[in-house]
Image 1 (cartoon, helix red, strand yellow):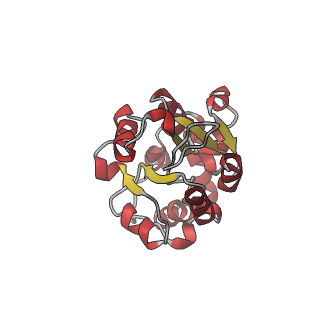
Image 2 (image 1 turned 90 degrees about the vertical axis):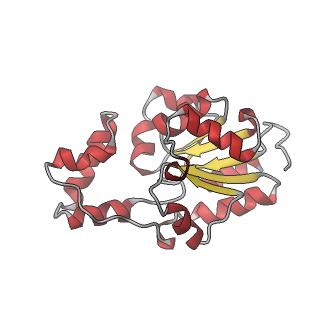
Length: 207
């Protein structure tokens, strides 16, 4: 593993939802299964994020039982720059990891999309979920690197940027998806080492 001489970064670790994977189809398919319009669902979902509440309370907010429908990650759900960003990072000598809060089956589904990394892990596999500091300690254990040699990339301040930064990692805040756009207006967004609009932008910054 080579290090970026300017930053000391030796590994880039990516969150999954709204960083590599566009979760729109999965959530809206659940809304349709529950008989909720896309417009209503999206408004209520954004309201929860704005109030810093757990997005999984969406069904309670809507006054209905959560649907049995469980979304899966498909190749078509990947953001267009997901594959095109990971390979160049590996090409310049950086290791790549993927670790996010994901349900059972997500690791297999990611593999089936053709995404490749030096390690892929999930909160379900580890039994620890972000923003728990133990999650980021596990990332370090998996990578075999000190915190300051790892750049963690995510779309959320609460789950990604702030806890990763607290653990000693460098951070990149990607502004996309509902959390990214809402959290970008908060002053804490300026604490990220990198503030990016796409993963391709991150590749250019590190290269």
